[in-house]
View 1: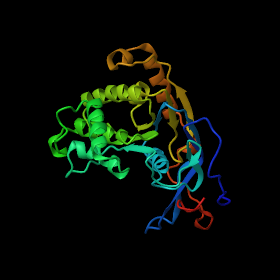
View 2: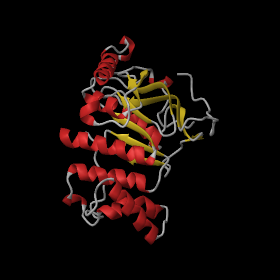
View 3: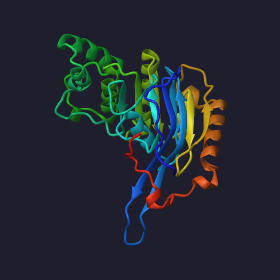
Length: 294
């Protein structure tokens, strides 16, 4: 790799999110049996997400989905390239992005209401206004009557509803979701998918959703971006032309759903041969640090 290229702090774009030539390289230390190596997690990812779009990233384990989401949140820096939201380069975490993770990440010492109001407190929203906003989002996610409960008193599905309400309550521009339903049972997962679509339609938020599940990707997304195995590259973007609103039983049983699911499955099975190498050896002297400044 030749070196780090400067990227602009702002760009002109109509897209809500622009992922521009993102590459992420990690250094693997020398072990007793292996020399030092460079692991290419992502390679030259280019992607645009429209305002109000529901875009899903799908790919095999280790293809860099979560790495890309970390870069979008600002929790990690790419080796090269940049991410822009509303034309402004992402340089770190900010309140224009809401994040929902697989593990809920609720504060156990705070009630449902207090968890939902956390971002509002950071924004210094007055207490009375916080109460009205948290009431609205607790109702939106179907948790009326549970505002004063603590996380240990909730089921897994209810905890994830709280996490979604908390992410939406401070009104972020973008909602980033990293396999948020992976830890719940199949029935609860389908219920949460229905609930998420209802909330998305009510709020109009831009959502970027990461999953391993092809069915989940097809059911939720406007488009599905298919990533290859290491190094993670963008194989193809599949447009999902299923009518909305979508309902689990009707949508999943349609012939169109089955055809799109099969197409994505084939894309994942037939990744280019050069993408199948799990480790990519690069001389350490030529490697670029994943935290190199842009």
